[in-house]
Image (cartoon, rainbow, N blue to C red; front, side):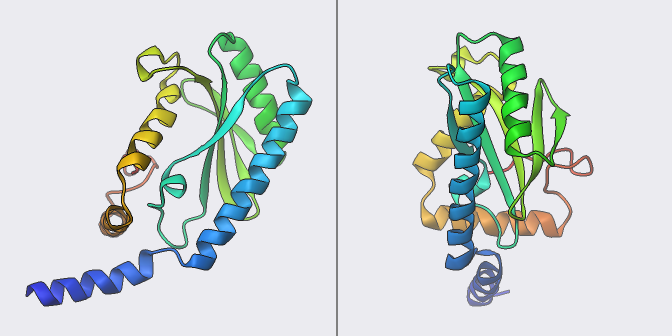
Length: 185
């Protein structure tokens, strides 16, 4: 295959996997409504706890593939909160935000559900100053997300989408058991 033919194939695939401006706008609007709902849940469940919300994952970084409908929203709790309180309040906020969702467990529990047609993971974590201070495995995720956001250009994000589609096409990408949770960018 010549360089020109390869470029033509990559351009054609890029057009299929790049989210449209309309898709991007719908996602951004849904994320804002989801954040509002989670803030309301925080105010109701733990009005005295100073927590914030951060969107992470491929939709936060612009590396999601057209048609994918996933939102990863982390609720960052103060680092001085106990682990048991993080779990209790995190689940309460998750269940209030996603009332039709269900609890799943990794190192600690979190809530998975749907919101306006998007699959949502609502995950509590500690808001630590540095990645060297993490208290749970997911505490590092906001740092990972920020690191990538600082470095990803539009061209690199497009390359990531192409790579993801290639890996999906050969069955080597995803966060399921079959692919053993291949890392997402």
